[in-house]
Length: 98
Length: 383
Image (cartoon, rainbow over all chains, first blue to last red; front, top):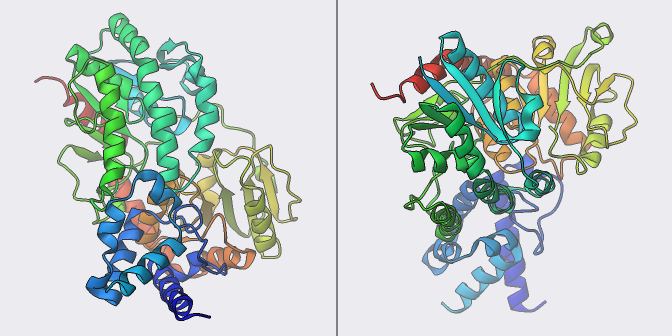
């Protein structure tokens, strides 16, 4: 596994924990969160939960990851299609261009 | 004495509260009438005056309503683009004909039939909003500006097509918005404007309650399970898991099962396509529901709930119920039989859920019901 892939796997693990905290352990259920998991259709999150997740990301990664402005630039269709993998890639990209 | 015209969509849960308000206004000597698609006539009581709107759009709307059975933005886009905006244009002429015939002093317009609001504005009549969905329970989050842009853009076009100046939210009155919950149920996330009136659930007359085998109800703890009607076609897997989860428990389960879904029901299940719910609530110990207005009724009877929201504003109802402490949430798409059992047994066994439900019951009863709603509607008239 390359360093980049390893880093992404770590980010995915961190995000999975954050998502579970935001939407509740019971809710996430026994189904694992993967890169292909969609926020809206699979996890059924809504605006309030995405905002809460955004706060957790800010607390963990600080200024390097500007999730709020990334989200605010998204069209309706892009939010509907948003996957956990896209967020992992975004965080990885922010870190590498630091 | 005054005249009030209700403008409603062809959805039962939207019509029911207006029937309760109309009956109360009638008792006080006012005249009331309804307008909407001709197909909704069976949902109105025999005494109701009705101005039907004929349209070929109704059949299409029923198909499109299925597409709204998705979470958050997926469902919202389908609802506004496929149902609400087309209905606004399609109903406008019919609503104006009803106004010309009935000569109302004010309109009470469902939040999904914007044609009523457009007609009232075109004719300079006072109007209030009937808001049976949970859409206004939470503030619009500023974090997704393009979502709001998309929605207000769609609603702006609807108003321009009607020859009206554009306001951001033509679906809600700035004089009166009736919400069929309590302030406490909505919680602290929303700071409601002064013209939002929380009147609690309105239990108007239900038409022709279906037969129910009351003698078959076992004297065990009783759980009612229903996912409403919009889930039809998607619920099979969930219902099978409910059967697995609760089939071996010492419970009486009453399952409302859509007729197009087949299920091998366990012996402790009573399965019906439709139940007389208002008569059933007092005999229950808990309810497993898709949320929606059913969860408000459940709390109004002081019962704890397990919520499995499926679509649209059900997620908002579910969140409010969970925040009230009276409900547990599970995933409609992903909950296992074990998780369903655990959640149902928790709300039955842990008294905190029932205590929270009873607190909500008191707040919903104190909200004032149909008399409070009628007072608010009468205040729309120029003094």
